[in-house]
Image: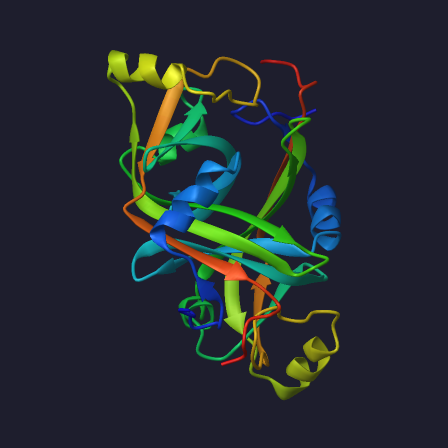
Length: 140
Length: 140
């Protein structure tokens, strides 16, 4: 069992992808006017790509264009102090190819915010890392 | 009612602080070797400062030293598609003053990860912003 610098169990690449595929909400981390920014979004895992649906011209759409971003999802239970967290880091791209837009539009992914959302952001998960929090972990 | 570029309701400064004070878990967003990084942590809101307890030498402790970071907390219900998200941006500092360490040690804040956690990171929430997600919002 591999542990990180904080003593948490390191998840395998496959386990990270499996957890992401089961989770509807994550947080995209980007830079907005030279400051760190973070925004929760619902998403769909398409192979090893994270697909987000938004509107043209939103802060998110503008700031993530051709940027390296992080994407995090977690499920942590406060009462039992257990849970997991997965982070992907990779380049974000705005989808412009009509065939790809058509394919992504068919995914089970609806934006929650009001208005039209025909703009897709895709993050290629180049680096994927995950941790599991468990009170049974040995203190090392 | 103020709406943002995605049509979500903008929360007041006071509402952001109130929600943070009621939430045990958030995510600290920082830069790790020039890449965006994000890590879930439990925290305590002390006035308008976010207090995190960690161990000396963790990646988090090293990477956030004198850095401008973001901190995000949210509570989003997938079924009803309702919830909120609050983000703070500000400078992080490692607490070194023994009197302050003593005071912070008395806060109701216990690190979940195994091992000794006598290192405190404090984020001054200089910029605070929040959004509420609600299916009743008008599409503008």
